[in-house]
Length: 379
Image (tube, rainbow, N blue to C red):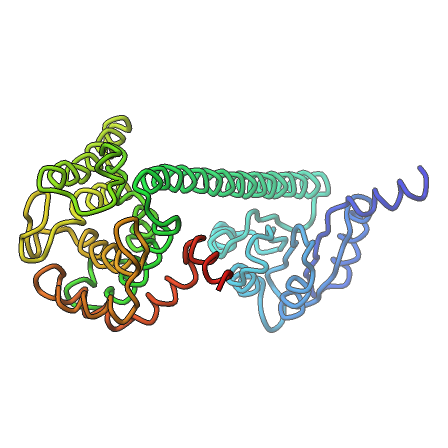
């Protein structure tokens, strides 16, 4: 065997801690184990705890019961109570060999209990068995950790793909509408900001846990997905719609709901993400006083998700340049929205909006549209 092979062989050998207060017992065990294992020695329970905690590669402990000070049972209890040493298998090796002694040893966490005088063949067999079991447990744990990491990676990839598809679908509807390119991004962030502000409000606290806020953020881009079904001559008209055209435009709420319901049917049921997306697409044009569409819902009958989107969508429509109007300033938009308190908007949602209106302005600036940036650059 070469020097390198010898070093590898030594490194591959498991490490065993021998805990006994009798020098002859330590000498005997060390001599028996030295060819197969690395050995460490402690002559009392306190030292054993220190050595075990300081030896990250420790594989097994041979522990005497009758020792001065801390006995083996208490030593084992403390080893099992410490997360750093709890997984190390402990074999009691002692002259206390009554049934109740064995029961006590196993009850405090030992994996085996051997009597003295030592039988080398039995000692080797038990040590080998428990080292093999420990190795198998470690391999299984590592395998499970690898699987968990893989699942997390795949889940993250699927979520990224889901979000990319959602944004692509929403952007398609926005492009047909001739709307601002970053409208869906802004409304996402408006929704999250509003929900975070409202989650401590008595009316909304139970409806806006963290997971729902994240789902609202993700589903918000689909609020106008139904516009994909509206004819171009209406959707892109540069001017006010006549009554007949407006009736056709209002159908986008039902189209959006039906599109998401098709997805639910394909999946064999709904989930929280699709539920919020359906609510927002169908009901964000409803008004607090019942004068909205498509169902003329009012007050608490309007889903919370749609009430939040109503504020986010109207604010962004006001501050944005559209084919039929120039953008209003932030201050002008605030004044127009204030007039909708109790008629268009849930009063508490609007109050939350005014409490964080500076955050809305910041979001609008961060995600402003490309044509606005070009105008700023030209100026």
